[in-house]
Length: 338
Image (cartoon, rainbow, N blue to C red):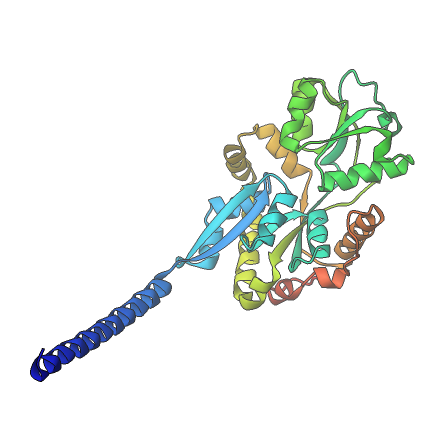
């Protein structure tokens, strides 16, 4: 190869490299622009969870109040969960922003380091939670549970009530065979005669009574003040305080709508849950829906904290002031500290 041919070859190599670089830069710029457009056009998601029968949440979803509160540029995903524990597991993995559940799993999650905050109460109840017994069990009082097979959903509000029952008679779980079952699985256990009793709630209890001949022994009155709360992912709420307020506004609107359209609201929940009208109506009538973080709510939370710690369920006692955040209620004009 002579000198002239070498120069031509070198020139071709340089031109090839330059073309490759320019094309690569162009593609990279185009990719960045495409990614930027995709990000701009991406739909924001708000994920909300609650156990079944939680009226304001179901109504807010079905009547479009959630969607209205967050706007058309947000996709609202509402999911009904089996239990509060399942909800906390989902929130731990960062897959839910707002939820409703019993105070017990929230406190356990907080004690385990999850940055979750209670931003309001949801409902209180005593008559909606009870100890029921199988028709041939011979159980007439709490003391009769000794040596029996008792079903309860582990880590739930019902579980706390169960422990309260036992304490009242100086009993422990070691005095009986405890069968950990979700509410939805308890009817089958009664029908199969594999349990003698259960600590459960309406409408599970009324269904078991109707289909398996069980009966109520005692409700929660005098044993525990059942508290259900509204909670949120604190990191998300601090970054998106408007979303927290919008979420609560949707719940308030649903609650007002239910009060003015009770029969229709019950039918909506019936259609959603596949239960009878009578059961759903009983559930609603045994709950008092209220939105507050007043002293009575804080006392109920403190009671649950102390109980979980005494039982060894949690290794440290979180402070109530580290669990609750009344910011959003106050900004919506709800007096939450009295």
